[in-house]
Length: 159
Image 1 (cartoon, rainbow, N blue to C red):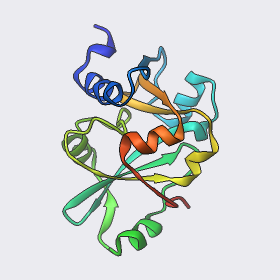
Image 2: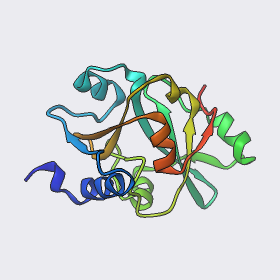
Image 3: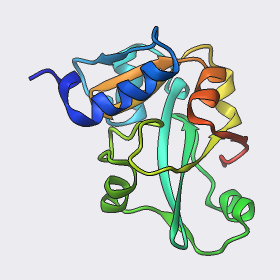
């Protein structure tokens, strides 16, 4: 069975197509589980890979989209939300909140409505690549469209 027929991949693709018919999900021969793997598979800079990181703030969750060559800053997030009770979500929480498993978490097509923060450092690249529901599936998008598609707010959230 093609990975493109898997439910999480179809969910990401549906969200993508609703936004823009010309965008599509690509199945890679090699894994894109990590930003480095993805950059190697796509022959692009690691920074052009969008990492989708789920965090927990008390009882609520939010997603951070950061450049593959950057680290998300917990301190900046704590200031942003004015909260000390912030942590990375567990793999089970990621699956429950987004419908995706770690390594294939897409910035779109979540099963729950999530607040999304997009790091401004992603703006350095013409083309960005994000996971599409499976470690071997990605989609290509530009920065402006990523912001529109995710309805994300542009923030400085990296170290």
